Amino acid sequence: MDISGERWREHRKFAVLQLRELGVGKPLMESKILIETEELLKKLKTAEYLGEDLCLQSELDVAVGSVINQFLFGYRFDESKLHEFVKIKTLVNNFMEEVGKPLGVLAFTCHGIPPFIVKRMVSGLMLIHQEIDEYLGHHRRILTMSDKNALVYFNAFANETQRLANILPMNLPHALTRDVVLKGYHLKKGTGIIHQIANVMTDETIFKDPYRFDPNRFIDENGKLKKIEELCPFSMGKRQCVGEGLARMEIFLLAANLFNYFEFVPGSEGLPSLFKDFSLVSHVIPFKCQVRSRDHSGSK
Ligand code: HEM
Image 1 (cartoon, rainbow, N blue to C red):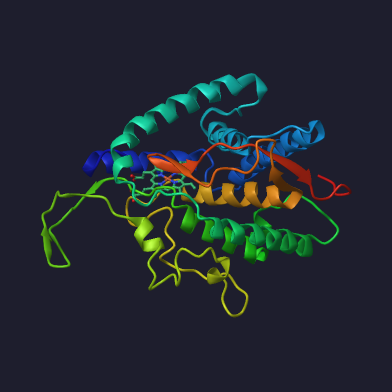
Image 2: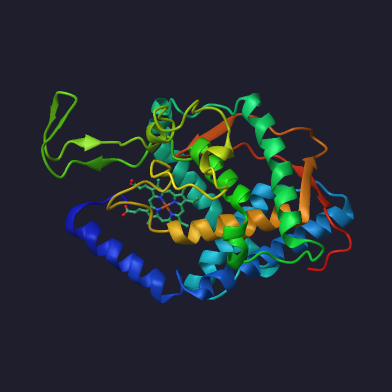
């Protein structure tokens, strides 16, 4: 990430090829994510049975970490390997915090989540439950990628969440590959720049009332999912995220199935904080919740 020119080109080509070779972008990818989805659902079932608070964020971290570890090293972070994951996560978090410190001063877009957004998200979640229930009828089962296109509202909700979550409020630094004139300013080749995808995703000429949480902006008049080019949480151009395909599939399979099987209520410590934390990427402050199965007669 932190390199450019020929060295970056070589690294990027290597990374893309290796990920493909290991199965990313192939049907194998879905089956690996589904393994983690089922394991996560089991953990949630157990937490519900025991009446325990659950840190969903930590459980999702393990699931996502296990997917990539399955590809790279052929095993998942089950109970016996969990200590390995915790060690890696601590190292990565410390690194992100150090690297993010100077950027934190500049991260003006990294504020809390306004309560009016939360209210709209909560009512949106009810619509997700409704959409999944209408789609599956009486036969609750694991949702797979073949179900994705049918769940228009879920996809619109996920898009709107990624647009406003703005997890990379300061994008990664780049350098100009040629001289550029921007709004009358002459910028020389080699000048360091940080392009702001956050600004694109809150551009009011594209997204009317940009700070309003409104999944319907991604649904057209025929009820189909609308593609809006300016939705770019994975950035754009040659340095666009290498893991986009994998991340998109994880978002659908994990989140859609969590809402398929469960509803989430506050844990014993109450509601989560609406503030975000920042260390290179912005993230929620850890919170605990309780889960409730949505369907006791359903089979998994
Ligand atoms: C929701 C999840 C993710 C989001 C929102 C995200 C977003 C981004 C963004 C905004 C960039 C910066 C692009 C730029 O410099 O303009 C980036 C770069 C990158 N991402 Fe992701 N990413 C995600 C998941 C992943 C995953 C799962 C992987 C690996 C499998 C990954 C690998 C990379 C790499 C290697 C780069 C650097 C690309 C380059 O400099 O050529 N990302 N990502």
